[in-house]
Length: 487
Image 1 (cartoon, rainbow, N blue to C red):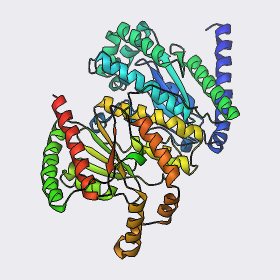
Image 2 (tube, one colour):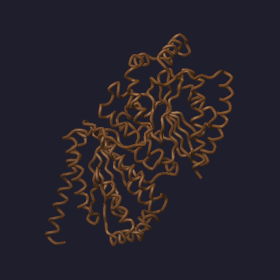
Image 3 (cartoon, helix red, strand yellow):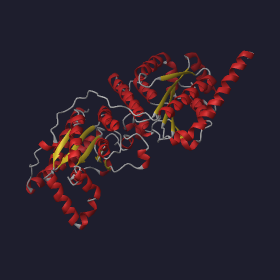
Image 4 (tube, rainbow, N blue to C red):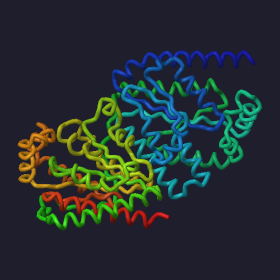
């Protein structure tokens, strides 16, 4: 090696040392400022992604970072939306998560394997852009790196790994396939970066030069962290986005008089529950995920309604998710995280008792999030639900509706019945005092988030029997259509 090259190498190593020390010194500030950081490391097989991550974490306190390879998913997780493993792995505030390959590799490989169609690939591109923007708008720092090597260098490295008994296991059949189809992969990687790099740019690193790649990655990371700490956590502004919305009535105009006799109720309940039980078998066999979302006034009858839906279902194939105030570890992440992690597997039913709509109701009215946060959430929720239906889920949303007089009567009944008193809290009374404000927020929610793919249904529940039968009919009709549409 020439003296000039040695001096250049020494300079790069010195810069790496300085930036490592700087990054290490930033960890406590990152924690204090509750800055969550995601470093996505994509690139060619044998390009040195793992080695690069090791360079980045070598001086960091292991209590405050994690490394994950979510693109390698077990069979059980393959039955979730494709973004599920990446959303599940996002870090808490103040921590760093390094992704060893991610949504790029997942999308490109499945597309080139013809496991997904061109149309499905386009939907995934859209979902990636939405997911990245939601992370950014929620205060996350996202750094996207691609480790590049040319075809000749990749062939050389793969050959070297395969010829060594101790490292041969690191070369998979997928890696060999990528090497054979290098040109096709190159075109697809470049296209993916072009389509997903407008909002949060990709940074291409020269994988042929390990120290240079490490220095450039460290520089990008430290500079972006410095900037984020200087500017403060980013909070996205509300934005308008076109969704196919259904026209919804205002709550005040809904006729709450419909009712059923006991005889009609018993007759229809038995018949409808039998049909729902039959459909559950078909849903499981055809691997159709079903997501039923319940919101409504306190004492409107959500619990009893849910029980009538759940009663005929096979207990091995459904879950009921009661959503309360977020726990500290949930508050420390983007607000949709706790719902991503509760999604059902394909073929299963998940019933949410309260949902992500808390962001535009309780959190909005009680001041638990900023105005920009809840205004932005209408479109974020529409995006989230479209990603679920693109995955193949049936998403139905029920607003269980009563009037104020009915609520007061039910509150008094609970208060005066010992075995029901646990159902009534001081918070229920406080929320009742804010009925007009909640009604305004709910009307806006229904107007802006009842989409063709994930519709809202207002369920008249002054008569609980009528409400249960109406909900069963809606669920059955939707499942019958979904089962007919799937092969």
